[in-house]
Image (cartoon, rainbow, N blue to C red; front, side):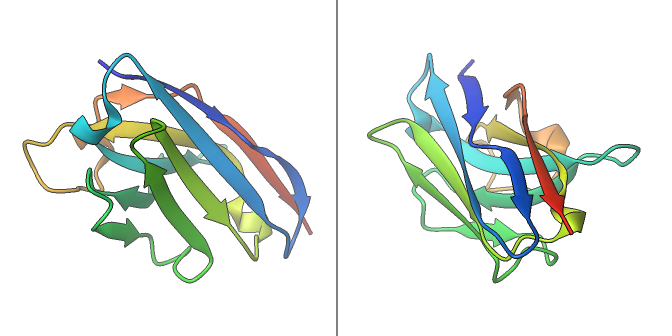
Length: 125
């Protein structure tokens, strides 16, 4: 399986921006659809954004559309999440995840087989 390591989280004021990075190792990233999920205290893990192996298809949760952008660089084995206009409700641990290519890009956590350790994002009001 591919190993994933997230970075780029931190504390930011509402309205600010952060860029999360996910570094993959062990396998070629182009063999996987990729996604970002997040989990706030006391809440279930939820889909944030996903990108197909080629980068041609992206999906976003309604709550982040127009504010977040997912991208990938297969040559560098990297996936990114640019987060703009951050809100306090975006506060969560953000996870990078990978799924195989048996299906098209999905949004269910159960479809993803590799996960990073997470990075904390805190947005103050």
